[in-house]
Length: 289
Length: 290
Image (cartoon, rainbow over all chains, first blue to last red; front, side, top):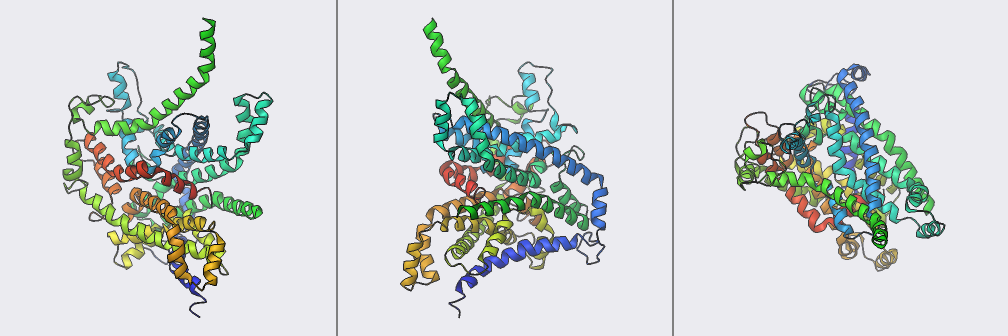
């Protein structure tokens, strides 16, 4: 008996942990989002009131608009630059692995570490602006990080810098998987390098593009550390994202019900992108077999 | 003259190519340069606009200060105790989550039973949750078990949310394992554990390295769990560093901040330098192949 069910028994601890700690906890957060919980969880259900309040809050509005701007810029720039880097690397260059390692190393670092470097580098008092003044360019101004209008873009810069190497690595794997016979044929037909990439190679990277984008969307939605260290959501609320909103409302303002509702919205947003991707991925894997 | 021109135009694509490659390399290395060079510079040199220059006077004082005397919160302890907190958190969490992942991946590929696909999907889903979704119940649960604000609490959290990744890594590795070998072993009457310890584990070195590196890097670099579930006695390195950099009191000692950031980066940077190949495999395995 024991022997027959041994596989099930062996896999139980890990499975139970995930079942409770991931799916059970999601259910708990969902339940809390329907209650009037403040500093502590309460079990007084109030229906959709937290969601209604959430959508009325200016802070949530700001966080969502910021997320749209931030994620669009982050994803478009990461894809374009990642693809460009991958194409450059793919030109049978010297010292390929050295270049690849340099483009990818920020992925090994904590956002708190790189955020510290960017925070002070972009600080007008001591960073880029002050350096340019030293070089004699007295009128140079770069104070985006302190500017309500532009602070969000400094987060985009740091986030792209940190993760674009990852997009590059995925695109490079995609490029290397392309059938080289077709490329030879195109070359024989007299197509130049640019035409070969634009007409033949990039259209074949559809699968890679989808994977890269899904992961970048996921990264964008959970961006948190970088904001805390660089701007802490400021100036004002200029760099709030839903992740900052969730933490602030739950742990600082003691509005747990609203915080839980915002976390559910984050999960829903990710699910909208990730679930179709899984479905599509598993289906195409099934076809291959 | 014409000959020279011809060779130049032939070489032009190469020149453009290598110039772009080097320009990007410069952009990627620049923040690291800023961190390093300013961590060995007196504060006045940074304040007077010398951020991009090499130090006029070299000093290692900022490193000593960041490590052992800088003010973190209210205590002038430096980052040292928090560095050890991170080690004490990372080592058990990496070990346990890797072991659980190995066992899960093994069973899910070699001892499939009805419903194994559902468990696989569960693990896959666990990788793609925003961690904000579990902060509230986890805070309650850690409090209930008396683990709030402790390092063992952080170990539990990191182990739990690492299982999805580790299971997928081992599952993807074992799914390609030669099935003849497994069949032969089963025919010979070897049981689940025997095959695991005598056949699978000895053949798993590459994926163990990939998983350990992936988990180490992720857990070492985590901030959200640390800031949510730890307190002053148990803060990991990242949270202590953020406190150092963003403390609102006193003079901003940029050089100490840069030195502290570098100290926090050293463990994962060393891994990347010496085992970057495995790190990249983790990066790809955790994303491309579901």
